[in-house]
Length: 323
Image 1 (cartoon, rainbow, N blue to C red):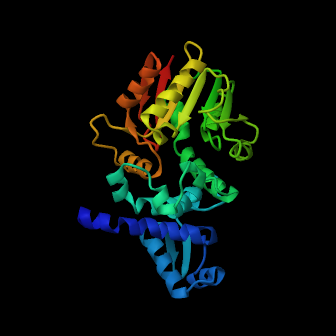
Image 2: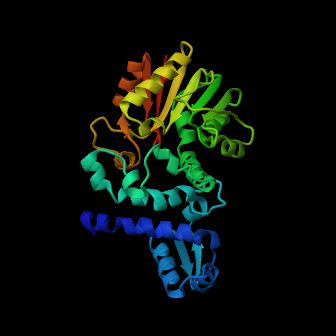
């Protein structure tokens, strides 16, 4: 199949997975089409078409009339899996799908698409937290996605010198948990909005300290290493300058800042996933993905004297800046 035809059809693959996850297909296996249709109250013929499509894109297997999850579906598309990505799948289907429909207008105007897609003004993240259920869906989806990368982000640089690690905007705590897993004699803290922290406590089960606050508005908890993981890509350069200056001022000499983000190659030819994420930031936020050189320039402008980057081969790379 040529590249153009492949890309024409690519969204159909994603939407097939989105629909199956939303309907709970991967939570119901092993099953037959008739049994699943009865459970869902759906049309048997249409249910069979969906299940067969999931077999074709290798999310299910079929033995006679019985459909079963593949290993990937069992790990990432079941709601009860510790590594579930269902929250992020639902966010992609219900939110990103609508925003990406207006990518051409985002390119013309250079702004996110929340007003156009959802009639929303004001803080763009208010959509995620409009209800407790939408907040939980969004954050648990990010947790599953974060667990794919956080252990590698923590392992990318030697952080053994640091004794108090504070993850700013740390959400469900996946990065902080990875830090204490690797450095059990140190302390980890998640600093996030008051509405987020109850879920953080639930997910981290007392293994990390949880503190309520807004990293733009409030004083930062003391630390010798701060982390900003999948945070800076949300913001424009002016806001990043403000935040990095605040972090730098709060750190002791020799303190560190760990940045977890997808890094663009310096020649801006890849990786593909980072450029797709950069377009997603365009339609969702005021930010974008950046190269290691761009993050180094931002960190040095804030006063950091050393900046080291490392690709991890996961959805987040790792930049370590030292005061």
